[in-house]
Image 1: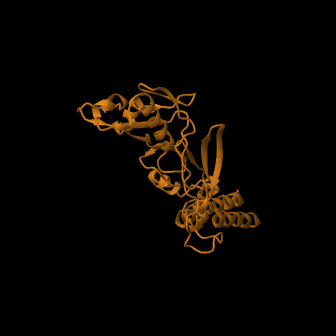
Image 2: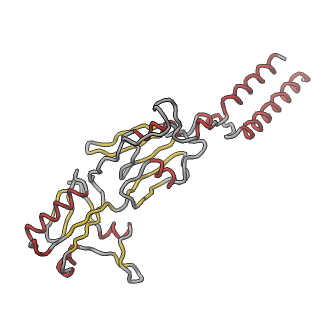
Length: 266
């Protein structure tokens, strides 16, 4: 009988440790790391600085649009409509090469590595006024990234590359856009792989803690990789809910009891 009791205790331990609780799945809980729930976000998104392989959309306008036509590559689809889709920008946008340069019409190579889009706007405008236009042309330059592209992996709804056409995206918006983290995903230790000029670094953020909103990694950057690990409970093979766990435990217990009595009768 003792082996049966030991097995029963083991099953009870499995049951008590395998259920996924609210603390595992609820975002932005107050865990005592802040004074109250009315948290003011202090970690504002830092201006993004352009990196190698980024694709830029650069548009030049002037009083006489004919003068700036050569600077504005366009994408014409099968229907004859002009657009600036992600696919179109891949072929017609300005890709930052391995040396941090873009090849711009008339002006040639322009180094943009490490610049913000606002700084690139000023740089392109200054070069155009210096080499091609006069102040009376009243040129206006806009520079944008070809979408905020990031990758999701692991225990998340949609794995792969995601693109949002926004200037600023926080990690909760990025996760929601990718179909949310699965119940079996570890929200307490989400990994962010971020690119830097000297290589990649891995950062950690706890999305169940409201203090995450103060993290410097709360806002994602282009080319971030968001990785969600599975909870240890998933590795045990138990259910995600109490009902599933009870069913699993009952099945295991039934097998153990049958095995025990079968062994006694041999």
